[in-house]
Amino acid sequence: MLFTSILVPGIGGKECNKHIEYRVIGQVVENVKETKVNCTEGYCTHVSVNIYNIFTGYEWGCRSDMERMLGNLAIISPGMTKEIEKIEGTCNNLTSYTSSGAINNVDYEVYVNCFINSSTNRSRLSIANISNLIFFSIPFFIAKLFL
Image (cartoon, rainbow, N blue to C red; front, side, top):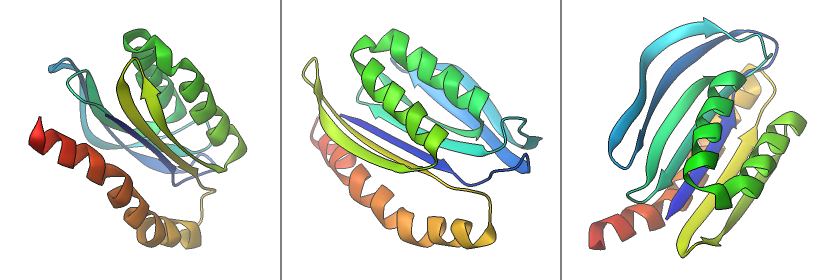
């Protein structure tokens, strides 16, 4: 099962938290402890991806960090190419997107939400979207318990 979440809490080159960790078939590909960075792309990103036993991880940081992680996902799961393009397009347009389905008999869910930097949007992000993140992650955790 795949769960993807992208949250973009900052626009305007402000300081972002950077924290990256993801694994491919259990092996750590990248692990960056939390630090403060200034993103030249103009906004911060947050991406979470789970494909059971294949690709798991999260990224907080700059668009370049997100693109590197999604690039690795595209290599590991070429069937996700169209979803990855939709994720990137959603961030380009600062909009929201949700999707679910199956690619090569692997279920996936995608949740994307991109925000302009402001304390108001960050508050809505932390209150309104946490319930969506929990809702979309429940099937993954239930499936993991029984597999």
